[in-house]
Image (cartoon, rainbow, N blue to C red; front, side):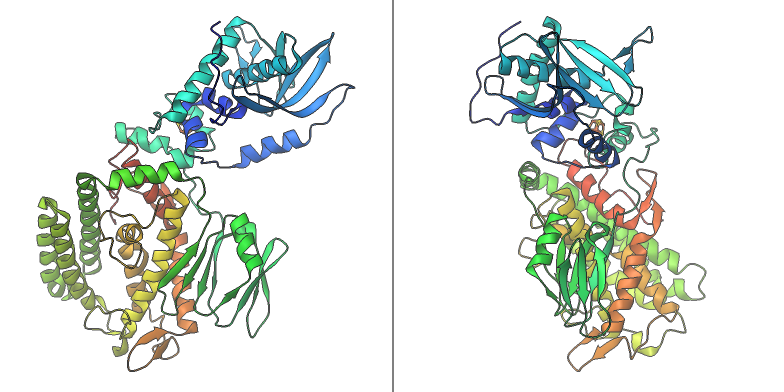
Length: 553
Ligand code: SF4
């Protein structure tokens, strides 16, 4: 066996658990160790429980022992060490069942084998004696498998360490695993999206949904002015000026949105950071002011984003895909909403024609400035058409003449702007969850006061997540022109009740599921925001072609 090289002491040591990931799938190692993405799913928690429940049952047995070697550049915590006939033996405990050889005999899985070999070699260095074997205990089958620490095992460990160090220096994600079954048991499948990549390479491949269909918590909106939010044990305590206090378990909240003049304590903010719950501040009119989230450990992802979005050709390609998706979505909506309505189709036909014209122009645009022009022209036609979609029962107060904002000057624009603020927050949350930099986009200009990447992604969702919700609610007479608004000469804002109504409509829409026409599986709109942000990141991580391909049905 070739001796292991002496390592640069500034390099962090390789974790034995990381070698386990490497043997399972090099991409998993890369995502966890280089990109620092770690997801604790139910299997991970069950494994931690198993290890927490281990108890020493023999004299001289050591549990959870930290081992480290500067020479090897390796650290790890072995589950258990026992002494047999004067020799130490490292044990690893696993929840599942062992692999089987051709004769049906139990054997260790390659990743488990590598892990126990690494502990044995660390133990040799610590105690200065040869360790002849390690053992892996598979609890589901009540079987212990012996792993010989021979020359082949040591060679395998050395090769794994060399590969691990090479991957840590690389800026490219390794390809997805060839064995699809590995992915179904992988905690990082929702980040890695292997099935979506298989579908990209083979459109006939029916993607299995490994992406979670629904969000894991609910968003806590605090709307009433003067409310105080504090921490009480593992809950957020919401104390309005009037009315009862309410408590919200932190592990059931996926974000906190504070509207207008709401107070939040330092302790509550700290708890949100600990539980990875982002906090967003919105103005009274729904304008996004700021977000708080922990963004440590996202350096690689951000470097790649900067590099990709400094390239004009990449930005143009993404911007074209975005504009085509947005305008086609608007066009389909006007077409669908005016179908079968007496005289309405005639009224919106001019808008539809104008949008078709803009689509043709966008398809041929060779620079982002002209794409912005076509997108702007399509928007004018779209809002013209939208005005004609009001049913007869919609009161005159909601009929509007033009899109206006900052501040909105009529009720319809007040609802529209407030909802876009909620959408901005939802998209911001998705972008931060993926680990992208919201200030660095590809379509909106960097001069924009809002975050350009958030504005970019929002374009895909304005129609399905808010425009059609607003039109539907107005046509169903869900809005009260007096109680739901605060009207002054200069502006129209939603009142407290109006804001609660808008939030209710928006959050219900996020909960709705639909079948994503590209990846071909069902998921909620809330999760679609995150999926699209992940598909965007794939545009510069070697798997382009899936971003902004979905269309409203
Ligand atoms: S999902 Fe599959 S390809 Fe992706 S890291 Fe996990 S095992 Fe590897």
